[in-house]
Length: 154
Image (cartoon, rainbow, N blue to C red):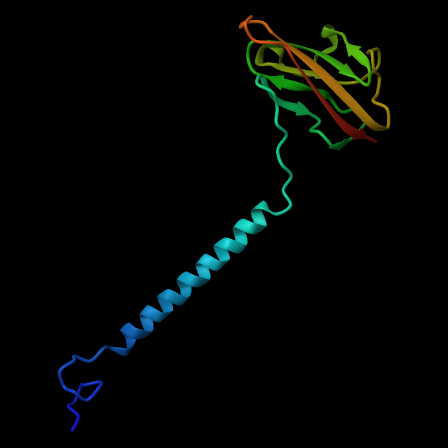
């Protein structure tokens, strides 16, 4: 004969509350769902993202970014770490240092904005390429470096 409160009829085991059994299964199920959503989210974040350009030591960023599509009046240049100066060439034309006016050179920003009376009044439509040569001003042991990149103008 089965005792009241006994699950298996032996009478020795205390009854396991249904809410406890149900709660454990809910927690396990929710944990598995959260893990699955996390994996899907991680894949979504990394899928299709383009790798960031690898710049040489001393170069922090270039504008426009390699492969970008920009208007023909867009600034072209770079942001360097402190202690560097640059020479900028756009589509084979060397930009005079006095026309690198769109950035703050004290902060390492060197940008050229095409315009009237400048060596380049507007960038040609289609593929444009820029090349910078950076020279150290503080650490004379560091070597000069050159970086080239291309973008499309419209």
